[in-house]
Length: 132
Image (cartoon, rainbow, N blue to C red; front, side, top):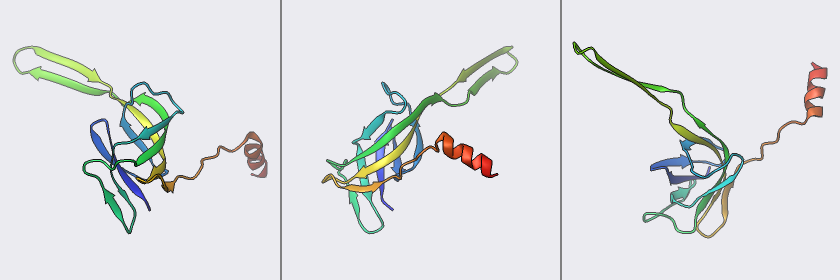
């Protein structure tokens, strides 16, 4: 199984094709759009590994942006004892949900490709319900 280590949002992720990831929000991106990650630190499979110094030039990872959203609220509560002083604050971190489609090597060959996800048509759904 091929993998790649990408860098985005100040973090590093080990990704495989077909995997769904939650990463830092990508600015200026809309849902259902294609994204290319060119900051590839390493890639490989069970037999060989290509490690960059610091990046592998020419390699890339293609992904689809599923959605941009916000995480659950994190409450920040500060209290100073015997001062009658307290402060309550909240924060919702934004994130992007992506699905990895293809991993390319440095010479442009496709190392691994995700299977296509097909939504069942209305006819197929209706036939399934009739057969139940």
